Amino acid sequence: MLFRSAGITTESIRALGTLQISTLTEAQLKALTISQIDALNAEQISALDLSLLSSAQIGAINYDQASALSSQQVQGISSAAISSFSSEKINQIINFNGLSASQVPNVTTEQISRLTSQQISVISADTFGVMTSTQIASLSAEQFAVLSTSQISVLPTLGIAALTAEILQQLSTEQISAFTNLQIPAINTAAIAG
Image 1 (tube, rainbow, N blue to C red):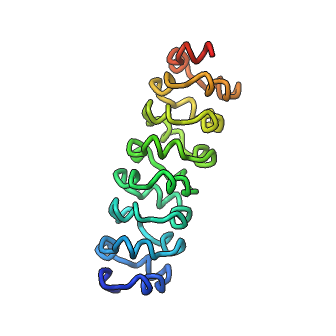
Image 2 (tube, one colour; image 1 turned 90 degrees about the vertical axis):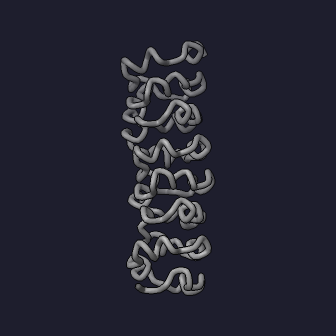
Image 3 (cartoon, rainbow, N blue to C red; image 1 turned 120 degrees about the horizontal axis):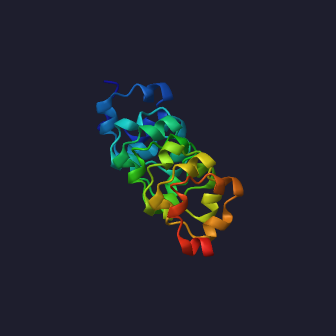
């Protein structure tokens, strides 16, 4: 064992290199305290296997650390732990394309509403396809405007029913043409009428 996590100071944690951080055992990672997680710099966080951290530990990741997460690390966060990120921290995650379909049900509508256009544009079509109608309804017109045709074509029909006139007006003709024959009848008539 490299060290007893509970006994190491935050100053000592900061002194560890990324190679040392990457060799921490599962037991050592689980033993890290919230203060110790907070003490890690962005480079050190990028060396952690986040799949081994608890929801509380994931929630302790700060803004700078969140912005350093790789798409592989985002994908490694447990479905339950993804909701432990505050909406503001979610906004800091640059590599949001790592979000998996199994994590989506635990992403809150507040977190979704805070996603940037860049984050929205890199979410895979498979991931978009499992969003709930409530999650889709939390997307703004600006967020919808950056959706790819493949993202639009997999939106569930219940989510399509949540589209507003404002959202439909923001969509390009290419995006509108991406709606499938099953999605078109689900568009709310009030949204069509404007």
